[in-house]
Length: 408
Image (cartoon, rainbow, N blue to C red; front, top):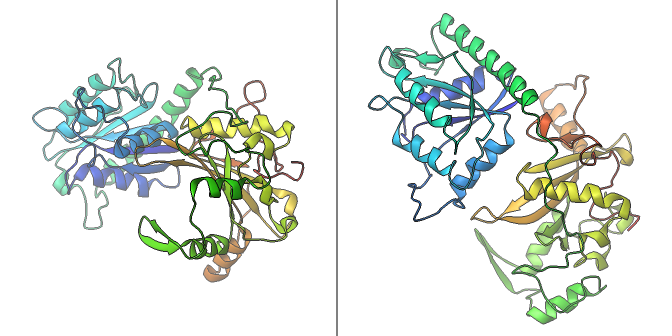
């Protein structure tokens, strides 16, 4: 189960941050907890909507992808800190990631009451219609006299406190499961994806047949694209086009980029001929709409993947493709790309054989693999994997979602 823990303070030194990190490390065998910060969240103002701010979008995506949320709040003047209230304002204005989300409240304070009044106020805030979180009743974890609670290694000293915290966490995990079962949503009707890329976006190169075999050459001529030894300024570097191509071709994986208009724009030439690739690409496929890159039978699965990534249901969809034989473990990864303002930019599909990496790791550490079952489609939550056939198509165990199918 995947949880996120929100540090309810923007202070550099915070005992509530220590508490969440302790939960994440001490109970790592029973739950995965990722600690999130609110330091970079801007001041809330309805007159200056910053819902697209990267810090707010980051919190939004992480909360949406998690099964539940733990909020650790200090107590300032008998209530929650202004920074936490400010964050909840943004997360209940245009964005509503906490709507229906199971939440557990914990808190630490310098005094005996252990943030009890702040926790009571936080419950009221989380119950507001714009927030609408599902807060676990009772089981309040109140860590008082917190300066004496942790040792030098940032572990809780008192065994009874640790035992009670484990009890609260265990009940919360049950609460998450019950909440999910009771609130099992009807299959969400996400917008239909136009796999023919008939529309256009700001970066679409108009006036050229997307299915043309020489789309790259035509498009480059139309926009005056640079090439060869001409320089490109990147985030932290300057490379020539030749250097950039060589760098991308040297990566131990196959990369394909399709934009938010579902037009396939690029793949790296790191394997030739095409039949030696994990997912064979052809030069003429650059520029094609995604419908052209996949057999018709696979297009519903392609649409499902794009819908999950565009809607923020998942940041990445992974699928093992076993057709390459026992000596390889090839995984197709579909990663959502976002602009600095959080807007969806398209998909980076990267395909690689994990087996050499695993073999190297085992050789270096002297460890061995144990048996067990794994998910064919990984995500933040088991509930986020592809739904049943009665709702949306399930992800197949063959290369049906590759951006370049041998059937295409």
